[in-house]
Amino acid sequence: MTQLFTRTKPYKGDETIQRTKEKVIDLTKSLTDRQRYLKLLVEQLSVEDLQAFFKSSYQYIFYLFFENFSQVESNITRALSKQNQLELEYVTNLLEVKYHSC
Picture 1 (cartoon, one colour):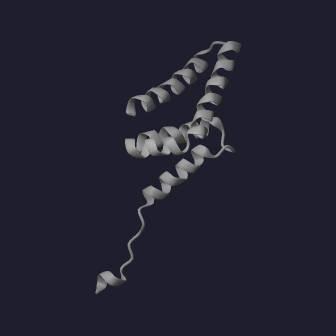
Picture 2 (cartoon, one colour; picture 1 turned 60 degrees about the vertical axis):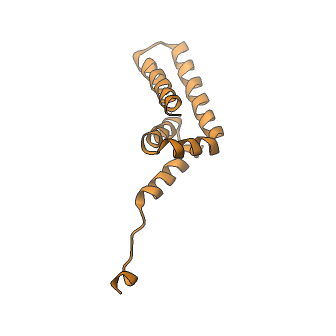
């Protein structure tokens, strides 16, 4: 009888992951923020869930990588610095993690 009236709290992880997915596809967020949220998803989701997200949001993810590579390329052509090299490595490492997990 006590189980009938007890309340179970919903799992907060699902809500957090859903909000993170929404932040990745939100074009009003900055590129670095969206990239950071995508990295969080790569670390948190299973391979199956990640593949489903990439299939449903591929155009946003493609745009994110395109813009990041364009930005890094323009920075490198202007002045080759340690920070620019780190940005390029960060973007390529994120791509490698995604490629190897699928």
